[in-house]
Picture 1 (cartoon, rainbow, N blue to C red):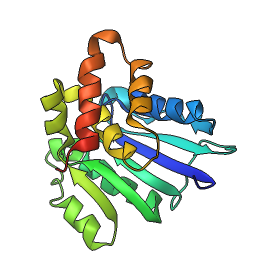
Picture 2 (tube, rainbow, N blue to C red; picture 1 turned 180 degrees about the horizontal axis):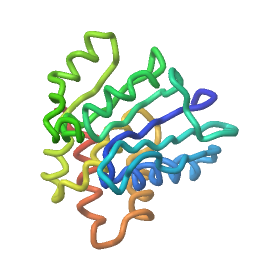
Picture 3 (cartoon, rainbow, N blue to C red; picture 1 turned 135 degrees about the horizontal axis):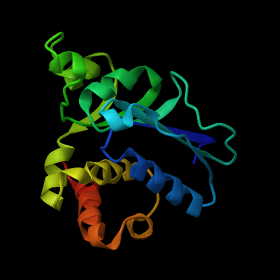
Picture 4 (cartoon, rainbow, N blue to C red; picture 1 turned 120 degrees about the vertical axis):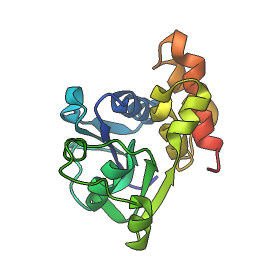
Length: 193
């Protein structure tokens, strides 16, 4: 692995970014990396934008990721992916759910939700893997499993064996939700959509 990896997780309050950052932190810690995870920033209890930083390396001193420093942006919602695009390194990658959640200006009728955000980002040269993570989460058993679908998709970019990811999920998720979360992870990891 290179010196450090910077991962931003962005979304809307209540989508499970805390569990996603916890899973990432655990799997890297178990593989002897130094890990710093930020607190959640934003109006998480009001359905507002939320972002979490996960920094991993041989030695990491700060959890904060500045613009142009993120290797990966993991987004639970496509507008949040577009908002976070400036944080991406030139060779970085966005992994995003295509779901659209209307922000307050759209709900209030003061703005329109932008169309084809994934296409616009691709046209700007951004490496984006945008897919219907919500559909896969629902296939796994709950719309709330989008976080595990996204973690499954991200897991393709690391050398940790699938069994290690499964063990980390087992150690992080309540037993009654375990099978659904494992299924969501595997759908994200193995799906071509």
